[in-house]
Length: 199
Image (cartoon, rainbow, N blue to C red; front, top):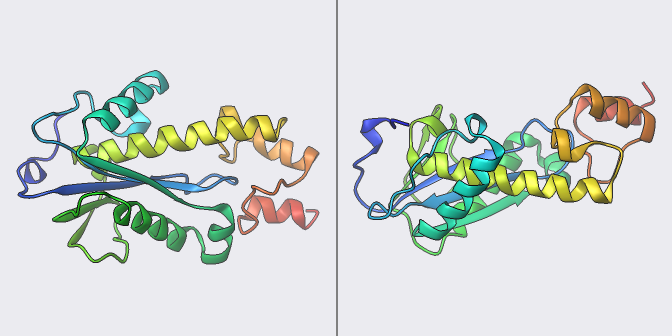
């Protein structure tokens, strides 16, 4: 993976931030902030969606071992319903950055918007394939959220959470219609609202 050269030699501590879970109908949105160690690089970083589950899990462990610091944070499904997914995601990103044990000199966030934080921040479109630290954050967030949904599959069997991770697949929608809405579903999302309204 060749990252964008304009972000390779930034001075100081650079935190990369990304989220996973904006689209699912259930569960939290999970974010991560990572400050990588330039002296101890992690090989094989890429957008988490382009990496196999097995490789993501291995990379996640390596990132945790080699990074100068990292923090995984979240906004719960109830916060998503209260704030909307956009503001809940920014809140979770802020929690991740503020949870870092080191103070970043600059924060680079995947996407078009920065959370409300006290550090210099830049939004980077397609950042998870342009900036190593954002790629690392996307991997940590993806592995964390996938593991949470696999665990929730045991609490709420029949919905297929371990397979689709809460995304609105045909299997998930059919399970909702058959079994109803669980406490972990996002009630503000239209497919869930439809079930709740008997449509």
